[in-house]
Image (cartoon, rainbow, N blue to C red; front, side, top):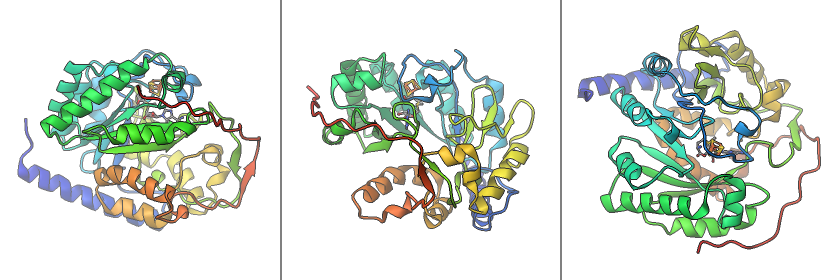
Amino acid sequence: MRRSACEDGTNRLMRAWNRAKLLWFFLTGRERVPALPVEYIVETTAKCNLYCPMCPREMHKQPKEDMSDEIFERLVSESQGAAEHMMLIGLGEPFMDRKIFDRIEYCERHGVATLLSTNGTFLDEKTAARLLDSPLKHITLSFDGASKETFERYRKGARFEKVRDNFVRFAKMKHERGAKIQIVAQMVRMPGNAHEVDAFRSFWGSVPGIDQVRVKEDETNLVQPETRKVAGKMRRCHYLWRGAMYVKHDGRVYPCCQSYGLDGPPAGDLREKPLGEIFNSDEMQRLRRLHAKGRGAEVDMCARCSTPIPHPALAAVSLLVNGNWVRSALPVVERLIRTRKLPRRLLSPERPGLVQIRQPEPRTTQRDASFD
Ligand SMILES: C[S@@+](CC[C@H](N)C(=O)[O-])C[C@H]1O[C@@H](n2cnc3c(N)ncnc32)[C@H](O)[C@@H]1O
Ligand code: SF4
């Protein structure tokens, strides 16, 4: 059933008020926040058919399970009036969840925009057409290399030609239909594929239907050893106030996208407590208290986290505008910073307290990119 204009208007007002509260409590560094996150990472399935060496799945064995309807529906209903968008991803491949299309529709009916990231192995013509008919707003196509050799090393279990053709066909279908879905071709930059960044950009940048090409930094320490740790004063991490919180398939809720992979404790469990209580659990308040004082580095997972923490001004902007807009703007901001059109410190804080704990792996220099 479609939502009425009146319901949409009320939801928009509630979300704007929720965001205003988040902004105020973030800027004033409060540990208790009478609001809810705008963004959620929702692991609708923990199943995957690939073995990517840089993926946190490699360190944290996952069961072959999907999220139950009960947990999923509870999350959507309890986050209403706050949730702007849900990233239906986690440590799994979304197209291995048989209910993924129902879940996209369910979010849409509740006024929540959805995002997916896929390894592309299941994106045949039929699935592509179904996806373009769905209300999905944004999709990331994960493709970690520009040559067969590199791609198949990092996307272990996938075939270069098949995934490339699936992604190109999907993007072209979108282009021909004039569909609105935003498509981002993404590569995670690692020592073994860094030399292929230019080839990656030039290939995917010329495929009709691709809206953005994103080169994301490696956020785990699985293929390159952990070399640095923050030891001194650390920037306040806005994720603890605005989200995204990470909801595991079994209902455990983690404070942010990185905490599960870095072995941080959950903030709570949706099977036991309402979302509002989890967002203000003792653990969430402890994290906010330390971060507000610049002492985030005293938390082991925060000291080891490699996700860039934006400058407070940029974090504040991300709370002023709709979460969907933030999601679309992120790759553009990253690129402007990389090409030095925006100051580097906006995303990468100068961390005087960074300590070297190991020598980094030397970067490869071979050039063998090909997209034939
Ligand atoms: C864990 S995957 C799950 C979704 C899907 N299976 C896929 O591969 O796109 C979610 C996102 O994390 C990204 N990712 C995986 N390992 C990463 C790493 N070490 N650093 C940064 N992002 C990573 C993937 O590229 C993908 O966009
Ligand atoms: S396809 Fe996605 S979830 Fe599966 S191992 Fe690779 S990055 Fe992880």
